[in-house]
Amino acid sequence: MKVYCFIPAEEAEEVIECGLKLSSSFTKTIEINGQQVQCLEAYMHPNDAKEINPGDVPVKITLQSGRAYIADNSLLGELGDLYNKSIIPADKYKLGTYRKPGCLIACTVLPDMIERYNPDMDEPILYQSSEQLYRDSLFYRTDDLVQSFKDVALNAYYNMKAASGEYSVQFNDEYAAFLDKESSEVIAIVKTKFNNEKI
Image 1 (spheres, helix red, strand yellow):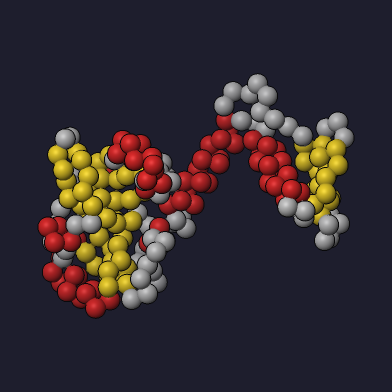
Image 2: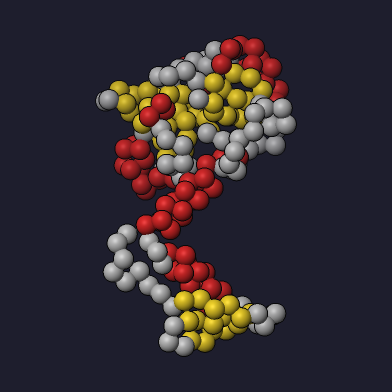
């Protein structure tokens, strides 16, 4: 498994040459089987990092099985109990199942496990970010389960646009007609609800 983290540019060469010692570099402590475990935090995708210091550079870490965990960072804060329950061994994680997966590395990162990440030279990553992959997977899965899902989603979107004043809307028995006030384009959307469909 490959994960990514960002380190200050002035430390990059030393980190790549010497690795990251867990005892001096850990950023989080989690509980695993009743034990407190120190961890380095990393990302499943370089674009998952939202707040990066301007001088930081990405490095790629290749993890072996064991001593790493994945948790859903979208469950932090008031959802902390759910966050703790989301922590699983990294080799059990299925890509796209967490909205904001964070990798928790519970071992020292040796020099042969770490290298500078170059998006132009490295193997391509076939999705834009973990959150985009999760959202698309959830959307397509729900669409497969519920026949009217796309119409319900379109209704919600264009009703939001109408509420903000961008569209006016008129109805007949079956359709809602949204009139774009700028272009006069009319968008007809089926008036639908989930009704008794199984979700």
